[in-house]
Amino acid sequence: MKYCTRCLQPDTRPNTRFTEHGLCPACDYFDRLGDVDWQERYEILQDLLAKFPRKPGQMFDCIIGVSGGKDSLRQALWVRDKLGLKPLLVCLSYPPEQVTERGVNNLSNLIELGFDVVVSSPAPQTWRKLMRASFDRFTNWARSTEMALFSSVPQLAIRYGIPLILWGENPGLQLGDLKTLGRTGYDGNNLRYMNTLSGGAMDWMLEISDIKNMIPYQYPSPEKFEENGLQIVYLGWFLGDWSLTNNGLYSTLNGLEVRNDKVENTGDLRGVTSLDEDWVTLNQMIKYYKFGFGRVTDYCNEEIRLGRISRDQGIELVEKYDDSCSDNYIAEFSDYIGISVDQFWGQVHRSINRDLFDVQSDGRVVRKFKVGAGL
Image (cartoon, rainbow, N blue to C red; front, side):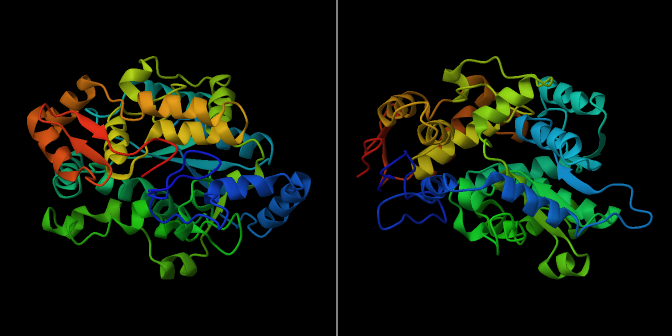
């Protein structure tokens, strides 16, 4: 395990590769942003949008996947008010047991701001069964739900005849998932190869439920993309101030309801991530136990690159909070999928990366590595 020489990105992140100078892909990209002509990028975007004129009968210029959170709120407002487009917003809704009141309020805020929103809700019992199977097989309850989340946008783009899909950050450049890189910095059609989607093949799901129940979980094939002329565009490539914190501040000023829980319960330093549900906090903790980094690492990496905190300050925050997760969230999730809290921890302990962590007799998980230095 090695760390980026600039930030706290470890080389254990799936699909990442450091430069010969020891920089992670995100820091390498950030260094190159200093030479970017942002006006030129804006003109590139204008030329790109001109290739997707509204066709007869097409009511919207583009489609944007939203949760109501910080990134989607900023995108929706920028696309409408700066670019002058009429977007159709698409939200994949969680079942009532999972969605938070905060999430419902934030989606309502988008509607009150004047946007057209389509809400997609997969069958809740199938959702629950697949979530349980995802946790049992992969110790990742979101393996199935993320398939539905990412698939809903291109599926509805095809159904509504809207070929232009606007996405937020480029996970290859801004996070380091290099398999998602396309022909250009804004080409998102390789999103299908990100770790979330490429690791979520449907074969195992068909053992849980019939194919007729799997429609919401099927990401359209490359052939379907080509047949319907679909193009995903990463808006983050065109926005020089795109960041987790900046998007949170911008969206809060436009009605975003933020999280008021303690950092010790969530690992959310700003209270602005994954606002529509709470159980992703579990997955961030489990991600930490599998790969040695979690939500706080992602926060700190951005802040270090932007010069708002030092690497040493980031190390202190990561050491303190990167495995934070409320016992209440764990109990609620366990009850939802029909297991005990002891069964939850048994599954988590079996999935811990023993090269990176030790599990004590009392169940505590202890790092073998030093944050910022590695092994």
